[in-house]
Image 1 (cartoon, rainbow, N blue to C red):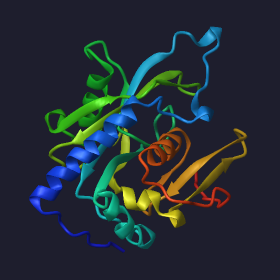
Image 2 (image 1 turned 90 degrees about the horizontal axis):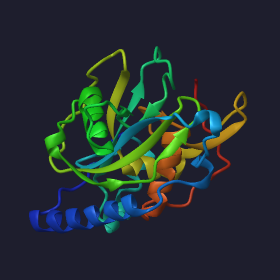
Image 3 (image 1 turned 30 degrees about the vertical axis):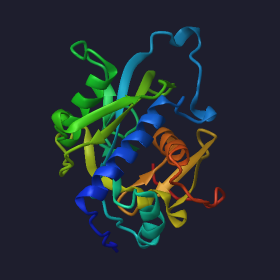
Length: 243
């Protein structure tokens, strides 16, 4: 089910975009992650490879779920009813994190002159996002991922000229979507995913087309709280995810 969000008049859209940029700049300036994601490298892991992901926020998104549609009026008061973010599902054949939902991103290559450059290159390669349409607003603190031995820097981007996203290489991505913030903050779409084999539990989101858990869900959970967009949700509600 999709809820139609009214278009803003041009003058209101300009003001809203300025406010949105300010919020995202503040997010980038934060330390940028919950404590449970801040794992320390031990002596054997000091050679972690640099990586970056692009947290790309744009306008034009509409909720796909009934629960997300119910959030439209509340988010409209905050000026973010039509904000979305790009998420993709990794190919099941990948060595690291197969089938998991993630932000566009990957390892930093020698030709990348910054972490932002790496994130933009990967977003173009994975989701067809032109770097020229993205305004980089800053970077959050890097986070170490023991499974892949990457130190990942989340790069915050504002999509000045949002467009369609698509899978560019099926060897890397299974699907890619612009996911409405309304679907992410809807309490009925939120819960916790427990993975007994790793003895971990993380925040989780079920937005209809994707189920998000782990590193990406942890960053989203922090960001939505920091931005003031999240509402109350049941942290004991289980979300079943195949992995």
